[in-house]
Length: 549
Image (cartoon, rainbow, N blue to C red; front, side, top):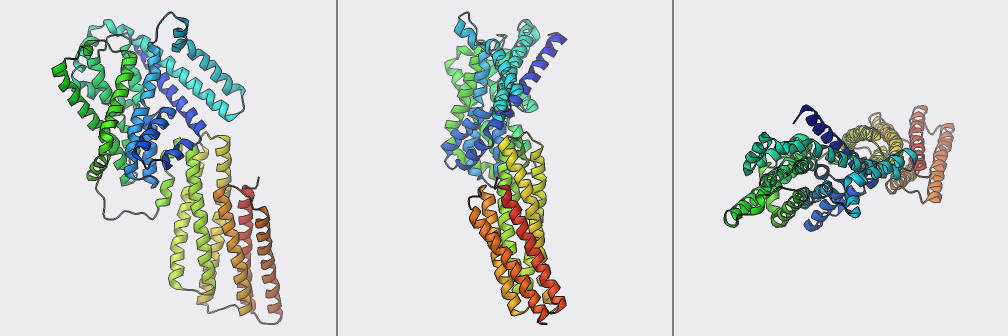
């Protein structure tokens, strides 16, 4: 192989990897996070998990992406460890779709219909169609479809280029000698594992093997152990994704590794033991692109059928590998929903951020209710507990804002971008509601330690107004979580009620001042409380307006 042929091979591999990435991005944008939501919800049954894992992987064309997604689900607490086994097995089956697509490069014939199936015939059509959709349309989904077309065309172009680059290897004695070495199953498995671990894509490594098979110099005795190794090598992505994650996330990566490792060992033992007695003649035949796809699918399907009934033992092995600590911090479990692994699927990341925003809204309501109680019945223990929860809520705000900004840097669909903008606006208002609420709690602390108290009438007015404001907060939280403002009359009525009670509190307060029933100092404290309540109402209205258009 000359230097120019080597550069052609590297260039073909680069095009292949870029095409895979481009097509995957287009598929993720079109799915808009819906595939991830389905995967999250429908994995209670192992067989359903296998089917869903296979389906999602076949659609997004990446078993690594599916496995990393599962690691994120486990890390965020949305999926149990036992649920991951079926999805991981299904992902291994789903990734074989890529090898079947790549096998199209091996189609040859003079018949017009056969020639239409050749990538050299339809790839240019897909490429130009994709470019037209990207450049000349404004619809986001059409642009994403164009990205998929262009990505697929680039993949096929890369495969053709790699096949052309390795054609001279067929007559090279050194290449033939290397293939003889790889006919040793252990060497073949090792080679497949290392190659896939380096490029972190089993689809790409299978594509390289299919390109080499186009030379006719790679027998099945070499191809089979390399395919086994490729299944092991693809586990490196999940292992890397689990670094810094929860214990169960690391166990998920272990499950992925153990499934492929055990499956490979069992397959090699059974296959080569049978070969000693049956003497498979096809092992010396030249492997074809379609033959690689058949072996790839057969291995993953048979491994799933054999190992799925023993899934609980694979989970147990992962738990034995990484045993539990005596103490696991679950205080910030909600923040695990904001997993950085989901940022590669920005539509789903927005969905996760919305869940955390909903939790923050509920927690803000609870803190307000407790702060309201402190104003009328101060207790030191309750105040200290509220302070801890307020600090935790501040951490949620900080993490969520950072996550939302990270999502905003991604390529979002129009609907996801709109929801992201609303969440960013709402977060600013919720932060201010929380600050005004804490001011109310601190006011209760000051009144208690200064041994001051409002008159009975002032307390009654304040209690009634705060009750109405609490209901307004609950309405706001409900509208945010449902993303739909279908109660305009109820909301307007409630807003008016709060405003009326605020005005009534101020009016009655002025009367008490005139009649000397309230001191000037207490009056200032009372008006400060009303100011914070009025500000909370304004921010509630701002949040509701986000969902009114």
